[in-house]
Length: 406
Ligand SMILES: Cc1cc2nc3c(=O)[nH]c(=O)nc-3n(C[C@H](O)[C@H](O)[C@H](O)COP(=O)(O)OP(=O)(O)OC[C@H]3O[C@@H](n4cnc5c(N)ncnc54)[C@H](O)[C@@H]3O)c2cc1C
Image (cartoon, rainbow, N blue to C red; front, side, top):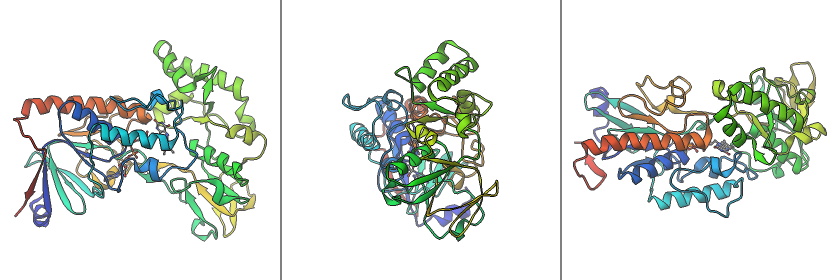
């Protein structure tokens, strides 16, 4: 960082952190802090909102349960309580994360939105700026998530629409859309589940399917599809497992091409590995598509004052629009001067080696493998930092020392 910028912060509260700084108090930040604590390494978690697990608390819908069975969603060192169901609800997941934080005495600093972080080569440390402080540490762990910001599609005419336009991050329940004709843009897990929820509240969802999509049953022969795939991959090549998955899926679900859900040419697991695109695990939307309760519509050409025009020329009226268009990382907006992240805020090095970057920089939770990826990253990052910690630590007791720059 140049001297002019340093001068700019002369009056700011400067905080020396005697352990890693972790940005984000979601599952990834908490898991990393817990693993570090277990190794005797203190850390400081900075969180922009006023609570931990803000995604799960504030940006998810009421009916959401974990998509994957509990054993694939546990964080390191502490499992779910035994009374939790196979697919915990979001409330249960939040309560688990709260217990997790208290078990490992993790006390994030809330309302600390990291605006800029940069490695100071002269000093050999990271400078991390929030609205009211500058934090300095040898190590920086990026744990702000792949889902930091909603993706808003650029559809012509969107600002002309008279009714509400809501991203799924703000959607809570179909109750608010009772008896409405709703255009749902996007057909991933969220688009399907929101359409299902709308149906349960007597709304009429029209789900836009622009691209190909893999829909798989959530379970096969009483086993979770995900778990089954993981097990088979230990013994069989990926392409063979994909073929098996598709065969069983067509046996259980029928030919989804016939209801306008065309499958990609690449198999579901290969596609996930290559592009990060998650297959939809059906939790009940498919029968409603088959029965016509969830209507499938083609790509939107333009939004009008009271509805939408589709690429095939048809036009329909809608009362509301829900954007199930996903999320993106925000890392490129605040992490500066760093080669290891791409423009879209994801590590350039692919899984399983993306967790470690240059100059004491680490990432947790950017594997496109959900909480399983988070757990794996957190353990590796903590081990790596703990090794360095042991070799350089000369016995400080307090991990945060307040320094005032003059
Ligand atoms: C609807 C939905 C359902 C999902 N279901 C599953 C599932 O069943 N199983 C599974 O494995 N995965 C699931 N996922 C993926 C899920 O997002 C992750 O597994 C998990 O939440 C990732 O945790 P994280 O800590 O990496 O990110 P997040 O949970 O997004 O946490 C990141 C934290 O960083 C904070 N932050 C962001 N920017 C800054 C900044 N500049 N400064 C300070 N703090 C910042 C945020 O406020 C947030 O608290 C789901 C995702 C969604 C959206």
